[in-house]
Length: 337
Image 1 (cartoon, one colour):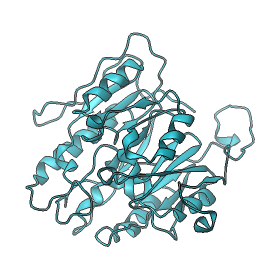
Image 2 (image 1 turned 30 degrees about the vertical axis):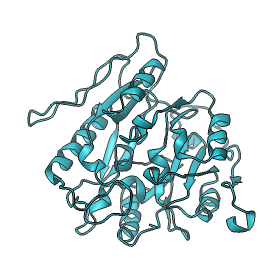
Image 3 (image 1 turned 180 degrees about the vertical axis):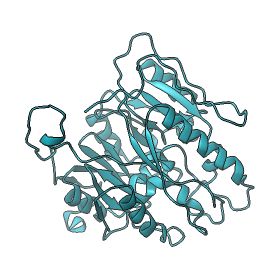
Image 4 (image 1 turned 120 degrees about the vertical axis):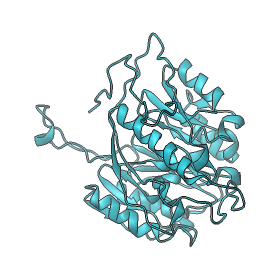
């Protein structure tokens, strides 16, 4: 059920207590039918954030990091979500795991079913069990421990009943078939080819249940063609927007929380009737993360007839294409089994 997060035209209060400038909210177009839906997010504060190693192209352990600034920026992001009417569940950070702030990598939740992460790098491997526990503590009743390497919503982008799944740098292609089996969703494999965009969530994000924004240069030819076929009305971002992690954004269907430096993308979003909310997460970007990296969405189970608040009883049917898997280019069916 779609529940407007804020009344149309209302500007959320994102003021902060210590006098810092709040994130800027772009004015809503005069005519827009975009509707926000209330979301529930799992997030982990950057209490132990640092760049102590390099596991992606963005990380430079020799560069200075201001942890207190990272914490303030994260708190601003939480304030934006809460001002929009979204719920934020806070996970407990663990010492020695500086990237735990990037909660999106801890799993994916669709229809009240969670598939946990299995990290590709040893530095982050201990996070997997902690996030399974955090998901359970957040009220997710079914939490699967995966058999294959996957980095959660880092490489899984949920668009309605479809899950776009990245491979090429982190997530094992076999994890895509596992995800389809465990969730009953259509899973579409996309191969990433540029190490700057090592996760799918820095190259594409869901605008709503039917459309996306993406940067074509992050994908191989077949992946670009598939995105163009599925989403002919997509917002196509520039390389400049991608390089400030503008595609690492979160949309509630109306408001889009996005890196403030992604000027072209912000303009395109407003043109399409969305309300961009630019925010500064530049300190966290030193580790290769942005808005979406910090945000793991807890998508609930579908309502059953006795929970539907007066709605007529209905039958639940598998999502279109459930259990179908589209292999990434060059991947054989044997590799998927």
